[in-house]
Structure formats: structure tokens, C-alpha cells
Image 1 (cartoon, helix red, strand yellow):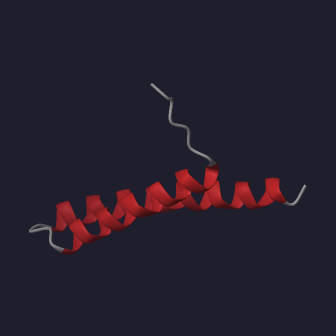
Image 2 (image 1 turned 180 degrees about the vertical axis):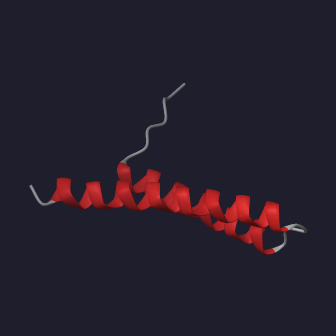
Length: 62
């Protein structure tokens, strides 16, 4: 069995996809509480994705 590994770009893409899914769920939430929770989670995940991306760019500059 081969072990799967993820590089920084893979992590960025997965986090971006999850953020998009959370935003989509927020758009169809029945309550303001649910919508706010999903939007907040999406922003947090998107922030993590951006941090990984920026770190990846910084490492590539060396």
C-alpha cells in the first residue's frame, strides 16, 4: 500500500475547496446563526489556505 502525501499546493487546493463548500452551505442555511457559523468557518479555512499559499511562494523564492 502506497502512502499518499500532499505538497503545499495540494493543501492549498483542498482548503480552498472546503472553504467554497462552506460558503455554498452558508448560502442555503435556514438560520442566521447557521449562516454566520458557516461563513466564519469558510473565512477561517480560506485564511489558512492563503497562509499556506503565501508560505509556499516565500519558500519558492529562496
